[in-house]
Length: 166
Image (cartoon, rainbow, N blue to C red):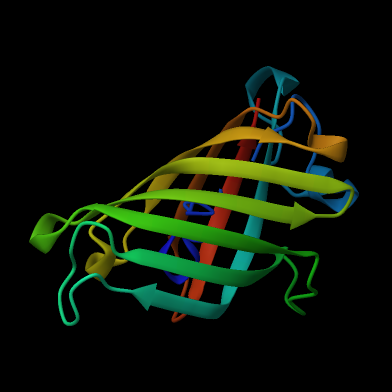
């Protein structure tokens, strides 16, 4: 979850779940949010990185054991005012260094009425490309949540998370 991957929600990741339950009341009304057959929902969030720190094992290189910690503000992607509805909190550990870098990331999305947890791999941090992570659970309104999160860059320090709840 680089720039939010983080946010690997994770982020990266996010990170997007709950069985047939929207992330928040307004999320269910997003255009195109229902999956085929009405069995799931998709919620699209904007994540703006507020803090991101890399803790390298070897200064100046990407090495196994490096850590990244990030926090981002979340809003609905369709909300042009970017009204904050929650935060993402992400930690990633580099598992393969060098030019083909890989990271294992864990993310929590703190949302109205509960939290979602997301986990997965993020490849090639320097590229800042898209990634997909699994929803591993949730609390409150998102208890027993399942699904996936697709993340892609949406500008400097901004990522677009599409949370697919099944």
